[in-house]
Image (cartoon, rainbow, N blue to C red):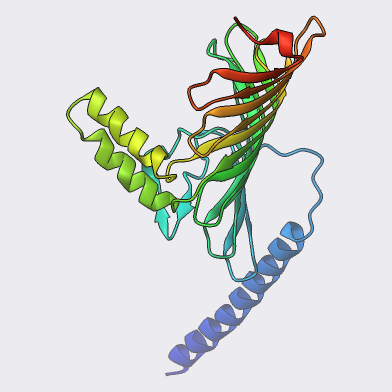
Length: 241
């Protein structure tokens, strides 16, 4: 009996000592990780979360980049395919924009800062878009985006199942004609041909006003019809014959 009592006292003492050691180690870990200052770190992804655990921002390489979320749906098919950079998320958990960059693979390169419409895609984009030949557009784009993103993605999946390319193109045109597909409405910047431009487009994405300063210094303002034909130009003698 005395032997059993000694063993029980030993086990109790062992448990107390082990608990104290674990508490000390846990405290040290918290102290080390809280407000730690680093001169340099290597990391593949950093998640910024709120106190309740909601994801608000992701800084990641390409492989671990967040695939995007909208209305609780995560686009898993895009995992490992999105550019490295920052992704922003609103309080609902939907992606709200991002700062990304990619390229230098012989196919061109670029980067952009985008802001998304609620339950939609990018409506404002600051962008550098470069082709493999070194020509590039650098500037601002503003888009018209009225269809909730998940609805648009589902429509695109349906269109992809159509039997011919002609049927698919016709379906995309119908989306655009209904004002449901994303349409670029305004472009300001330095264009691929090295001119500086302002282009304003209608709801169908067709350029209707173009202000341009060419590399030789010539400046002109064109008004175009829905077919893309210049109907009035300043100076007037610059209208194409």
